[in-house]
Length: 167
Image 1 (cartoon, rainbow, N blue to C red):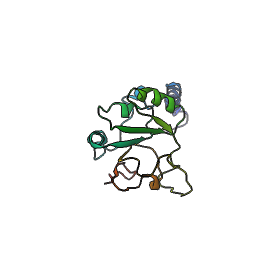
Image 2: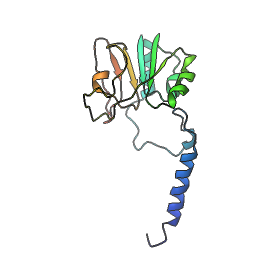
Image 3: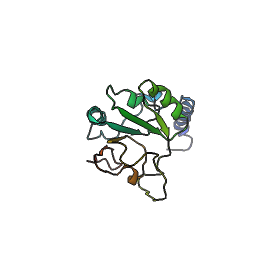
Image 4: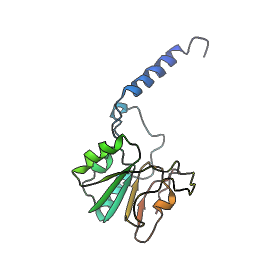
């Protein structure tokens, strides 16, 4: 690209950044970016279908990193004991309001710093008793592996960063 020819690219990038900065960030709704975000490679599983089936048979479940509760609220069947967690403070009241009519409490708790950095220092600790849930849903929240480890009767639906589905 010759000198001065990047002006159009810079204008486009600046416009897109300004547009994104002005977009409302409420919950986990990115409708303003519809048609602009596409996965590089389709996932080899349908997380929504897996979660739908698992939620129908679970007696107690947690949705980690619920955002504004939009995804969880879309499921017709929820277990008798359903809890959602969210780490981003502005999303907590959004999710709590959306999920209140479903009887789902939303708990603010920090996720782990990173899935790959398992420090063992208590970061990412969840405020629940061990084996409190039979099902853990997690689409994107970083977590401490020790907090989500399989125990008696626990089934997990947690996509790992490498793209594999854990059993």
